[in-house]
Image 1 (cartoon, rainbow, N blue to C red):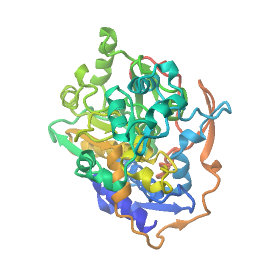
Image 2: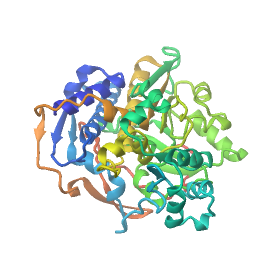
Image 3: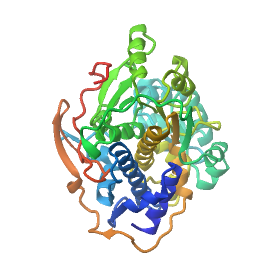
Image 4: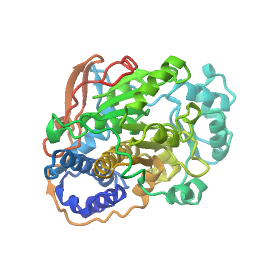
Length: 469
């Protein structure tokens, strides 16, 4: 393992509250060419996957009474998994990428990036620019944006319910009130209440052994897009019964669901409908873990604030993910990886003079997803030992700050150097299922005899009954 990755792994493990002595169980397979970028993306990816695997190994040891199994982090597996959505093939078809209106645009004084993959965000963008949805062509949007300052576009589009972010340098983000709020947050915010008094549901004995340390756990998945679904996909790999719940009014993009739905089931519930709400409440009453990926405050109108969830489900592990953090003027704004890269200065650093760039992967999404899974696994280990109700919080913008401002020493390799990363095929496999024949990335979370593939392929979105196995 390089000093850079060891330092990053040590920092992430400390943020998770892990025992530093366990870091000796982690080794790396270092491959040149994995996730090349100006910023240390490969080190971040290696660290996020490494601590996730170590947290899984620690929970396996806690549930079996055995020693923590060794963890092995291979840059090839990590790099392939961090772009899993690009490697996906559905019956040979490549996935649909960003929509035409999700891109950079020149403004009167700079550039903005918009996100309009979902129909309601596309409609909001058009409305903010005074266009009818059917008239919002690339040329029409470009003409309207070219007339307006970037900061004004950012405000107007967000006010209309859309998503647009002005391109900023790292220095401009540091001076921004939201940048300052994010800088004050820990990488992983961890809280525990009711320790030694609330144990939660006793976990059943493991039947799959140390390879599936989350076996028997019920994970209520209230997440969308990439980061949250990556976290719950990982928990499903490790044996959890992960059930994703979506609103029938916000259908998921088909390819996104196929990529992140492995190992999980999917149901659609309208929390405003009495029968669906009763079904949801029954799920919540028996859940061990609740993972939310909506902006802070979005679930409060349903009586599902973090405080209400903790009160209604004592002993639960509550894991929350947001784009911008839960403090500061942007706390309640929606956001995606691509937009966070633009706001925080990453796009400016990775670009050429006058032209913004991007990371080689949606690394904030994937990295934060593995950190979120690690935080859940560590909270479960601590709950087994001490009881209590745990709450963990992470944000894409805080992971971005870690990438841009973290300590990333470059030093000699302390691990195994292998062939350069050029061909992802060793870390791709094919699985048949209800959605067709899927070519997809295997899991990079490797410890002991951990599974590389999921117990079941993704099913059809919203097709499962709202009940635990």
